[in-house]
Length: 294
Image 1: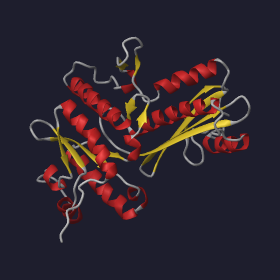
Image 2: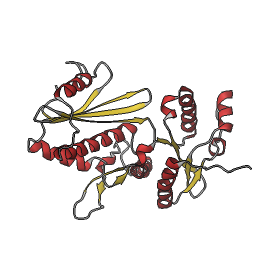
Image 3: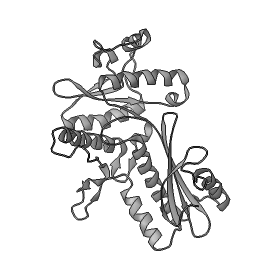
Image 4: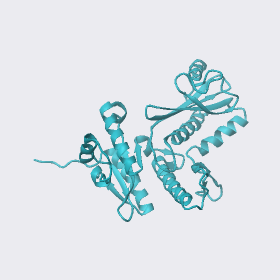
């Protein structure tokens, strides 16, 4: 007997729930698994035969459309095969190129985006910054904001708690905690490094404790190109948020610290040689707070 299949797997269903809130909040309509050909107008595009065939045989996981039924954002949920399967990555590259040519923002996500960081659900945070970034860009195009003024999403005031206004950011609470620990000499220093390699934005933080041990956090995100926030900015915030959480675990005597030898080996890999901007494996220092990370 023929059977119907689930349209969404468990992870995609979680994303669908979050995207439903986003669509309702912004007056959008959410479409699930529309054909790429139905979303992108290819009349004026110069396409190879492979790209044209791809258009008719592929779909997008989610598409948000405005009240005139014009797509404004595509979201792809990437499982592990999108990292490890060369053929899948090649197909992803074609899809990225076609969406870019059509002017359609494409956000690639995985299960990292359904997690919480502070008060934020990561995917909801990105989508909110995306919408604010679009409003900023429109105002800039209309001349009400200087053309050379950059959009800095972490400069937006968060008014969730009227008794304690702060800036947005997944890492704001962690930064406050780390700065307090630094001021009280509970930590020696912490630094963050970044690199963009093979379509991935990677960040890593290292924190030196007074007893010679270290704490380390990291994040790796596939590159995406949407208004408002970049993959690298997101990775940096998530890495700092994790580092703040690790300091809490450490204070509870949980076994989260690296030995002095482990930390030094990591620092040797991350830290550029004297006079050089990046390490031999591509890591660049983003910042260092407290004692220089040398």
